Length: 94
Image 1 (cartoon, rainbow, N blue to C red):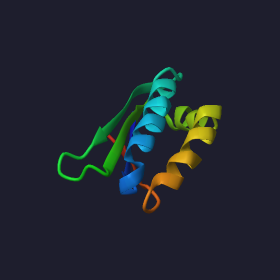
Image 2 (spheres, one colour; image 1 turned 135 degrees about the vertical axis):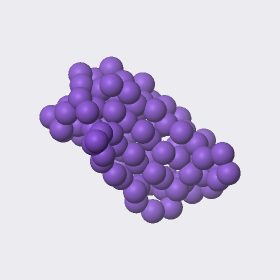
Image 3 (cartoon, rainbow, N blue to C red; image 1 turned 90 degrees about the vertical axis):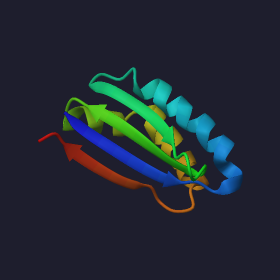
C-alpha cells in the first residue's frame, strides 16, 4: 500500500472553486481500480489550506490514476487556484 499526501495553499478568493473541483476529482478517483481511499481535508486553522490523503494498492494503480482523463483535466485546473505548487509526498507503511 502507498499513501500520498498532497498539500495545497489555495488563493483566498478561489477556495469555493477549488473545493468544487477537488470534490469532483475525489468522486471519480475513488471509483478507480487500485484506489483504497481518496479524501480531501481542509485545515481547521487555515481555511485556504487543503490536503488530499490517498491510499493506493500499488505504483501501477497510481500511474493509472495519473494517466486518467479526469486527473489530466482537473489537476491543471486546481493548479491555477493554488498560491504555489502542491507539496506532494508518497509513503509506505513500515
